[in-house]
Each structure stands twice: as structure tokens, then as C-alpha cells.
Length: 169
Image (cartoon, rainbow, N blue to C red):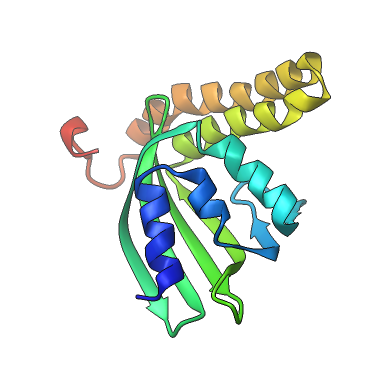
């Protein structure tokens, strides 16, 4: 495993956002798991994003990595947003200096992604005023609440898959 990947894993496991940020290329690009309409570009935007995200997610633990050579890696971690379980896979490409140049983020399950989306969009919007942040929180929070209430009914009607016991979730 290369040094950047080891340092990234340590930064996530110790919940050290500044250590993670130190691994970013000045021209880093991050592709959102929520929308294709925007992406974060450059050290300042991406650093700001991660400084907002890290306090929202707790109990982050890396549980696997997959590498293809020295320049392409996927890191898998899990944690919680409030009471919502969240898993993430980050497809990363490294530059010639071994810094993270690109990151495409994938998340599951939907309830965890919606919980994170609600909190992070409100946190990022808050710099434009509390009213704007409240509107965004209500919009995304509404999606999250509707999904959380409807998921059990939808699954019971569909009768697919094998139920996962609560202690295994």
C-alpha cells in the first residue's frame, strides 16, 4: 500500500480532517454522490467541503481498500450520521506526486445518504444566511423523512430479499 493511501486510511480512522486535507492535490476534483449538476474543484472548495462533512459523520472506520497500481485506489469506510448507518466507497486517482487528484464518491444506504445530504447542504448554505439554510434543510429533510417513513411499507409490499436482523445492520 502506498504512503498516501496509508495516511488517508489513518486520517479517516482517527477522524483527522486536517491530515486528510494534507493529502489533496491543489487541483483536486470531487464528484458528489448526490448530484451530477455540480462538483467541487480545487483545494479550497474540497477542503471546505471536508471540514463541513467530518463533524457530521461519527464512528468512521475504514474496512477495505482496493488498488490498481499506484495511481488508482478505492477506499471503503462506514460510519453514522445521527442514527443513520452510512457506507462510502471513494474511487481515487492520485497525481504524479502521490496526492489525491480526483475522488468520486459512492454512498449507501439511501437513508444515510439523505441524512448526510440534509445536514451538509444546510451547513454549506448557512454561510449565505440562516433563512437559506433553513429552506435547504426543510427541502432535503422532507425527502429524508418521506423516505424513512415509506421504506418499511415499500419493502413489505415488494416482498423481496431476505430481512436483515437489526443486530446485523
